[in-house]
Length: 140
Image (tube, rainbow, N blue to C red; front, top):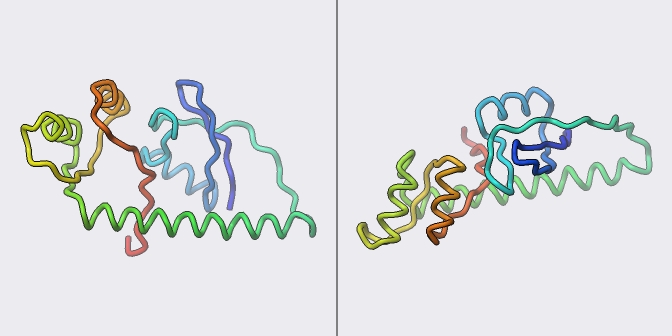
């Protein structure tokens, strides 16, 4: 596992864990790595410190890997619950969220895709939305 310091065009910085550098590159290219503060998917890697494992830090590294595995399992369960209980409206998320909010469509749980600008506009209109880290399913 490797941890990267990442940044977005808005100047937010955050950390993310990846299996290896190729996994980061692939996910970033596909727009799957998003800033938790603003949702921007154009992220860049910051400089990385070399990690030299010693007997003392090995226990911490193992514990961090275990915690990450638990987090990914929890995120997979969250994805499963969303997919089971909500309707996928795809790229029409912002439009459908507005219709539901203003009573023009049946109230129901939905999920889909939207741009960071569309998500910001929904928030400014007082329409509750949440951006979730969408991890790959185990069966994918």
